[in-house]
Length: 159
Image (cartoon, rainbow, N blue to C red):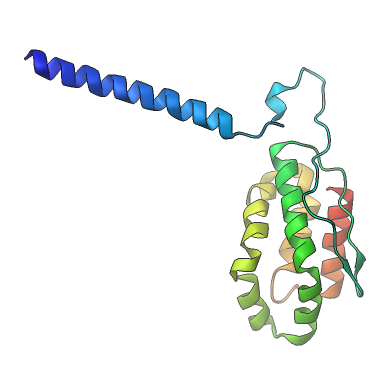
């Protein structure tokens, strides 16, 4: 009987320890720029881009707006950074591919980071322009030079 109690206690202790370790890891892996650490009325500073915006002859130079260093702000910036790396190929493919071929390309692994970043932005009212422009620019029927320009504009406005 005593052994059984020890097993139960050991299991409970292991669960408690597991929960504590999981919470500590989640805190350590979280964004250092979380808005939770801001004082009331304080706004986060701008997120720092990790890539230099691209320049494409047909579209011109892409600029990144002042994205706030919040979780969604960083995701929006990551989406625009992924877009920056795909803009030139996008112009070529929009001109050369059928809508079906474009859909296949948009479903490829090169687009995964952008779609992953956009996923939570669809419900954030602060990023409706980016999310809408991205959705239009990445569908076979909607992809065009003008939709690419809309996404460029949304990224430059950080909205």
